[in-house]
Length: 98
Image 1 (cartoon, rainbow, N blue to C red):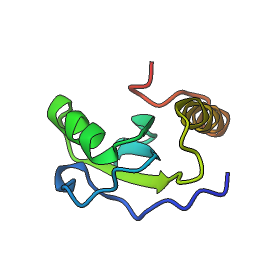
Image 2 (image 1 turned 90 degrees about the horizontal axis):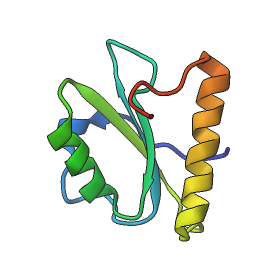
Image 3 (image 1 turned 90 degrees about the vertical axis):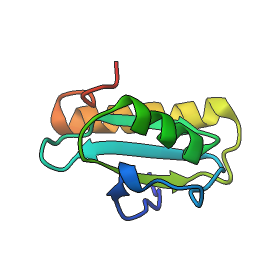
Image 4 (image 1 turned 45 degrees about the vertical axis):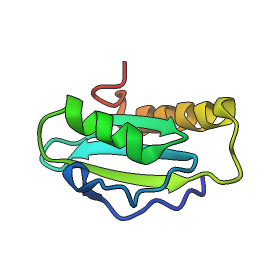
């Protein structure tokens, strides 16, 4: 989809320097692929903090900012497309998606 994903970082390393702009993100456990979760949010740092509080394990996170896509329905369309692409590639949805 032409997204510029960041290098992965541990979910535990999320800090206030994370962008608060529109993003899509992915979570996974390096020792147990495939992806655990794909999401979208307009405040990434806040959302990742909630994931960190709700999940155990050494999860990794990577994100792509969507500055030109500020409407929630547009972010949700991109998220849905990413879930579909993951399904086509692995024949399964992300582990904690639904």
